[in-house]
Image (tube, rainbow, N blue to C red; front, side, top):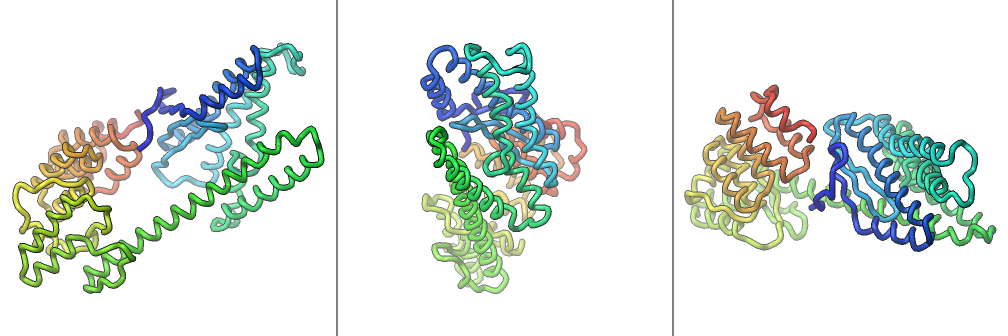
Length: 400
């Protein structure tokens, strides 16, 4: 779960991580005297300004953005509310250095009294020059993870959408190795080689993260297909190693074999389990089959671990037991404060025609989940259809 923001600027949450503070201290130590203090101060200011440029551009597309300041870098992450064109993404990438270069140049002219080079003794002008336009221009170098590399990647994706990231990895490695080879021939540049190879570390991290995400998505898709196949054909042989059919499938199988007590115990035991999750929700199950399992459960329905309780409230919604879904999801929310349980209460309330309660629970969900996640949940839930144009709902889902 992300750390709470240290503060907000123009409505954007800003996290200041320990690495950023360490960076500022190192700048002061490496540059003793007033120059180090001014340089650290302006790097902090212009880094925030840079990320605000990204954040404002993202907001202009309807996305929700937040800022994190860390060692050697700042990050403006954003969650789109719609599909963005590659040119919109390129524009978001360009907005950061553009803001830094523009404001930095104006600040430098003011601090220096003109366009010329600063006096060696002018600590303020030198700090502004480096922290503002110089670093901003450096960030436009067309390699990853710099903004220039992101912009170039969007351009490449126009011609090779499936290979753009790999092409950028190759370009980055080639540029970095060429630069390092050149620096090795220049004694004055050798102390900076450590900084030159940093993009390689970022590329390695990006490649590793990309593979991990792809593997996770593939595993989840494979598990979902296996669960769907089990419900459709009874074939449970396709489950990946370490995973089993959902307790709902197993419970229904026991019902069909005349063992309602075992069916009930399977669902109840899963609710109270502390073992790692090894199943996928019964999204492909026939409604009648789910209703048969629910009919065997004791009332009031017991609340258990958040995921299993969330699945149970979702099943109640699917089979049309809206009153039960509302009460159960509210109890589940009180037990674990899971934002998506709040969404289930809202869905049930909306299905029952209680708009005020539905919107109130959507507001509750926004307190614990990213606003974009709540928007997607609302947009994908048919129960909210009568509320699509409700001003109160629009206000809850608006930018904070």
